[in-house]
Amino acid sequence: MKIAIIGATGNAGSRIAAEALRRGHSVTGIARSADPAKAPAGVELRQGDATQPEQLAALIRGQDVVVSAAKFSVLKAATLLQGVKSAGVKRLLVVGGAASLETAPGVTLLDSPNFPAEYKVEAVPGKQFLDDLRAETEVDWTFLSPPAMFAPGERTGVFRVGQNQLMADAQGKSHISMEDYAIALLDEIEQPKHLKQRFTVAY
Image (cartoon, rainbow, N blue to C red):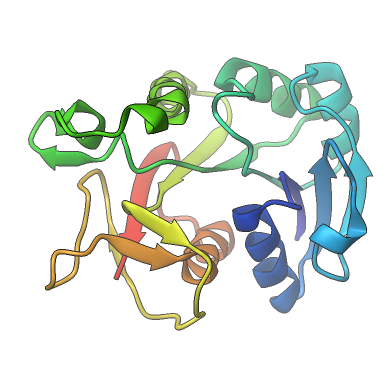
């Protein structure tokens, strides 16, 4: 498949690109600063601003799937959807956040009293982004939320899949490597099971 990744030079985006290439897909990377040193070899980098719908549409036209690994404080759902629709791309996957996952019925991680204030800059617009996607009916979107701890690590291929609840292991640790997250996202691209849904993965 032809997969375009917004933010392909970032931590998560570069690992998703690497996983897609490993599986034989064609990968186009969209980044404001198209630095080849920050993307896996084999990615076709295109410099552009995803916050400009017309510019984004021109960059992703002809792709089968768009993956957004952009920050929610920078790229809004309405803007992204406008560009995706204008380009005629029907499939959109979004690297989500953990803050909108539930820690109890109707209570999100963002609602917890000890949620770090410095994380709210990204977490609040991230929750709004998901709410906006849930109102979208035309594009086949999927929002994949990582667990609380999301960092570079090992590629094991062993993890659990959930829906809207924050997951943790037997020791109470809520975590996954970016490499294993990338596996889950590519699995969803290849064999869709969560169209117009949010899901999550964790160890």
